[in-house]
Image (cartoon, rainbow, N blue to C red; front, side):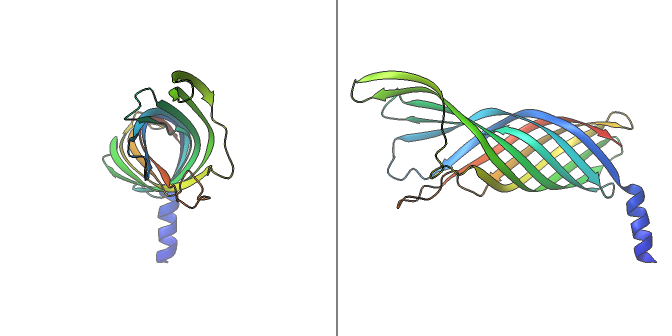
Length: 214
């Protein structure tokens, strides 16, 4: 009887919602520089866009899945050679699946998302300048980066968490603002050489969203 009562309450409170999100993200590229003592890596801003779906089991707990196009950009340069400057743009398709915890009043509520994500590296582009040691001249470039299967790891997964606020505009429409953090657990490079070369993304996204509540 208790189980039936729980299922009836859960079913009554269950709620579907779908929406869209968009915003900016700041990516930090972590790597072991080893002997490259003058090698400098800086984070860069990018764009994140996506669609989202959520199933609320109760008024405080839901399951959320997003499908995002997210840029994980970074910049690397040389301290000794000021003409060496690479700006890389990396586009990823991501699928975070999270438990969503909600708290607060009826119209304004806080929420926290915790879960895991999987991603695929779609493409990469770079532009900037470099120094040619043979001609002793600086040259510029703006080009697509070709993937090398033996070197590049295009699949990614990791942990994701976020915190935000939701405002209920009407009975069926709600707006959200969220700060989300993605922590990659897979290196972007395969370890095919004797010297291991581990490289990871960590990305902080600031995004706004609008949801339709069924």
